[in-house]
Structure formats: C-alpha cells, structure tokens
Image 1 (cartoon, helix red, strand yellow):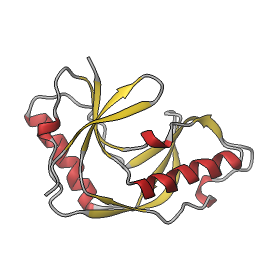
Image 2 (cartoon, rainbow, N blue to C red; image 1 turned 135 degrees about the vertical axis):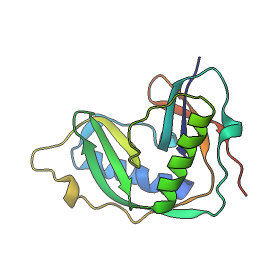
Image 3 (cartoon, rainbow, N blue to C red; image 1 turned 90 degrees about the horizontal axis):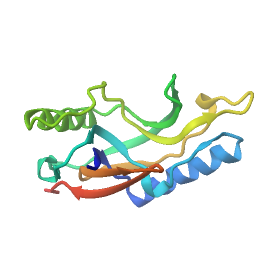
Image 4 (cartoon, rainbow, N blue to C red; image 1 turned 90 degrees about the vertical axis):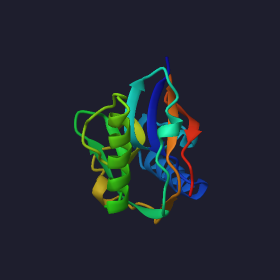
Length: 167
C-alpha cells in the first residue's frame, strides 16, 4: 500500500533556486541528509498509507497565484531544515480546501496545522556561529497552477502520480 500526500510541485526555476540554496548551505558548512532537488515539494496534506488513487479529488486552481521564497528555519525537535514562503491567503485557502475534500471523502490525513514549507535537509547540523535568519534566501517565485498527488518511497524519494485539473 503506497504512502500518499497532496503537495505543490515547484516549477523548474523555483526548484533551481532551492537547489542553489541547498548548495550554498552545504558550502557554508551545514550538514545533513539532503533530498534530491527533483523531490522537493510543499505538502498540503499528508495522507499516509492509503490503497486508492485520490487524484480525482484534487481541487483545480481557478486562478494561479504566486508564492515567494522568504526564510529558512528548523522545526524544533523535528530535525528538519526548511525554506518558507511569504504569507499567502490563497495558499492557506488551498490547503484548507484540500483538507476539507479529503475529510469529506473519509480519507484520513495528518491534522497538524498547515505550515507552508519545503524541506531542504533532514537532521541538519549547523556549524558554530551559523545564523539561519542572516542567511540570504534567493528571490524566487513559484506560480501555483496545479495540485499534485505524490507517492513517498524509501530514501526520501517522492514521485508525482497524479495531477489536479488546471482550469
């Protein structure tokens, strides 16, 4: 049974900016488990083990909207170094809609509050004196055009297995 989640897929340009950011962090001495840039994504809802394809439930994007890369952070106790985006009412509404649809279809999902981020590294180790808030984040914008269904595979590999409609 596959592990599934609903997420946003970065555009090639946004992914390139994230990959360059990963490279700069490594060059600055940050260590950790770095996912392949091809696997980077922004999770809207984590479903987990589920036997059915839920692609038909993915909501369409009625009007594309931008997300701007804005900051870096580490989740306390979660050992995740992440890149965040500027606050977006459209993104918050999209995540809420995805979760409402899953809930209405009886599909279980992780109900932790939505916090938009892209995981750049797991189990990060920062060099002494390194300051995430002072580390420059590239000016990168992702235009959200579709919602994707991903399958999670061992080794931090994530594959798009379905795409929502684009209106």
